[in-house]
Length: 346
Image 1 (cartoon, rainbow, N blue to C red):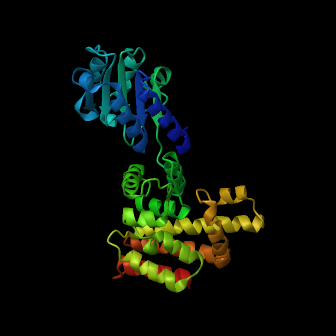
Image 2: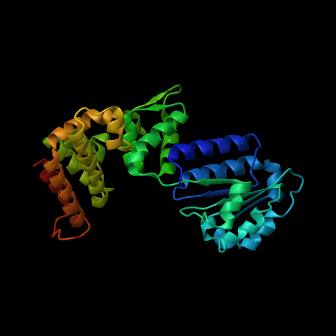
Image 3: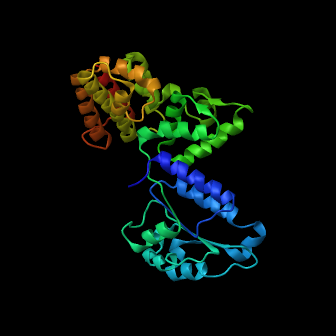
């Protein structure tokens, strides 16, 4: 079973620490839907396995589409020249035909070779010999894609690992900007750190707005907040500006609203059965939601009781269909979206 992101993060940081100390496995299998962690480990190995002077003769970096299994095994079985080890890296290894045949080498790897198999958006069959061989002699990293609701928590954890505290609303705003692209978040974080005053330990919404180029004022994150509190005038204004953005996507916007109202529905169901829920009860009903936002959901449940919330979900399904070209008439996506928000409020 795939590990949760906290386990994957801890595993990869441990691997990076090991390679910086010169401790290597003979084989690394880096795979999964999310490329951030496989790339992080792969780059750390390349940076630390060899000195600059040793790389000309002892480093081989190739791509799965350009080589055969036989080429990889032949390279891995060479001995290093004037160095303690040699490094063989196969990038985009999901394109390597008959990859399972690497089990022949992985069953008896050369101690002086570090072989890295890096796959993007794919994984090998865990039931077969190749995967089992790597598990016995080497290291396997499997990085599963995160879900939207997990992103604010991942961002908070990522910033904490860099000695920074990011406010919950700033994390939510950054998650809205980057989606589930962890590499994009890492790049934007480097940009933020470069521009923050030295010694800064906390990152706010203002820091995200100034350095990332997204405004909370007219974001879907702000829209869901205004809808929760039924601030009609403000919600319609935010919806109009948000829908006018060049990056606006009706399906993505409706999906974000659906996630929000589905959480309200689940939270409302919890309150019907447990009028005074504990923090753990709330966490189960609102997965991925920072406790900082529970107060907003208390208001949302009051403003959208069960029947109203179910009616909103039905509206979202209707406008999702329209936004994908179904029975929308001449209405443009931005007009459709504002109309949807108006109907939610009414």
